[in-house]
Image 1: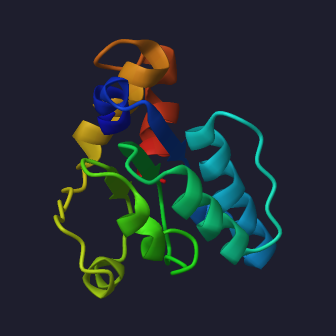
Image 2 (image 1 turned 180 degrees about the vertical axis):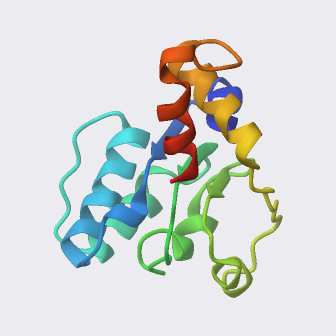
Length: 150
């Protein structure tokens, strides 16, 4: 939601979902390739983190960039954090994670802790997205409650 509120004010942007589903060095290179491809608006293939960092240093200085990394279990320093100073002023990096320690380690500028939804809020949230109504239809109510409990 935040990405969609902000993205129009940035010319270069990347939103990478569910990073927690990806693991291993090659996969992290793939994430860096996706980030660079999004921001540079062309297909990028890299062989190493250093190659990716070099591209960031050479092609992104002075550019105002929005980067959203969703569901980050841990942040590989090579992946992005060391490159943040190479981005232009006004650039924003948003990281969603369940690890407060990660945010402390990388000395995040700002941390927003999101309160978990209770069962009723979760059911309403699911209903809006699944049924476009505040409550599930009667025939789906039990199933929706089971989904929410999971």
